[in-house]
Length: 274
Image 1 (tube, rainbow, N blue to C red):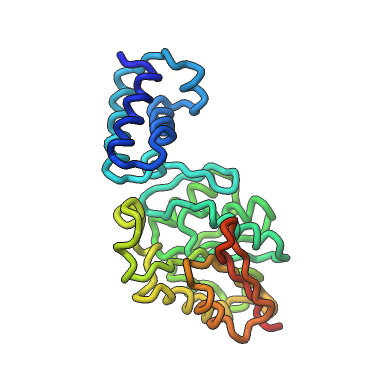
Image 2: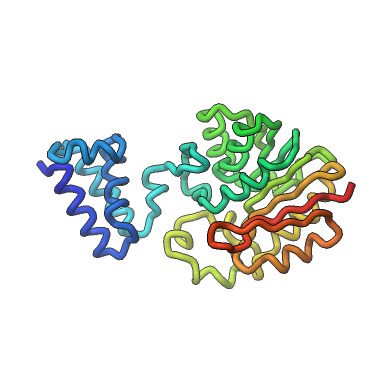
């Protein structure tokens, strides 16, 4: 039987030859998943022989990754804001950049909060656990809502989940804060996406019409109905979307833009007129 060390060497080489980024780290994550161990185990027990079952699982995971399947969909997990979230192909994989949206929200005062297009529930669950706010979340996809519900239950968050199109089922003047990481990829930009994103992540959570601004427009329009007077709207920004989204918020108060660590505008916020 092959040892942990030899399995890592072989897996790394296969992934590198297939053009997979960070092949060594990916091999470690996949082997840890096959062994049902943390990564530190690989270095503490390099001479440990793999069981036949673990070797079969590891080989399948390597094959899936070489075919373009994202590592997170293989392991069904992704860390977000220090917590372990379960992910499936029904939801987008939470990105570190979206943590800027969390940070912006946590600086505001609110009681009733809505996460529009929750996906895995990363935003809704995180905000509820960090602030004990009354949090609701919507998604048009029932399978995605089930993933979010599972994450909320497993992590101990109290989130009211609703399956609907954006905010269509949310009562008027019921929220102090709306957050959203909406779809913002234009259909014309589909072929420019990484293979892992284009072929594996849910298109309903990626694409927003021909120009990428359809969902922003709908959220801004309906937020005026759903927010209470003086309430806040926070949205993640897509690449080069700042100007258009800022124009949509004309007439709102206290418009603010926050960059990510690379200096790229990442979050836009605005307050409904009191």
